[in-house]
Length: 74
Image (cartoon, rainbow, N blue to C red; front, side, top):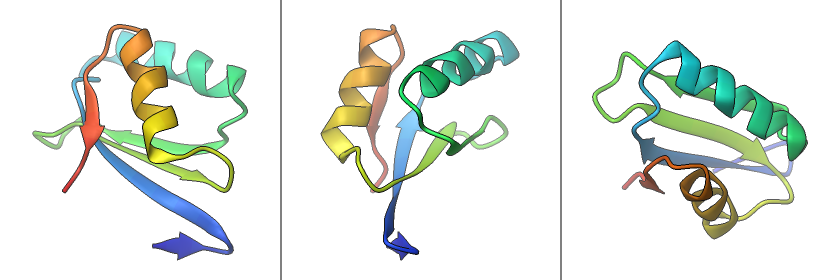
């Protein structure tokens, strides 16, 4: 799936709380990821990222390095 040449990446995570989301906000800003959301009401806490630079494995590694579970949503 692409939006204006950018890929939309979807992940299953354990980003459940507001403090988790605040940490992700800082992390995304540090890596210049401007278009992202976390659906904390979904059972899979779906992380959606729009990026034309980062790949699937880059995001998984980044989120995992900060103590969260992250896997491709299939």
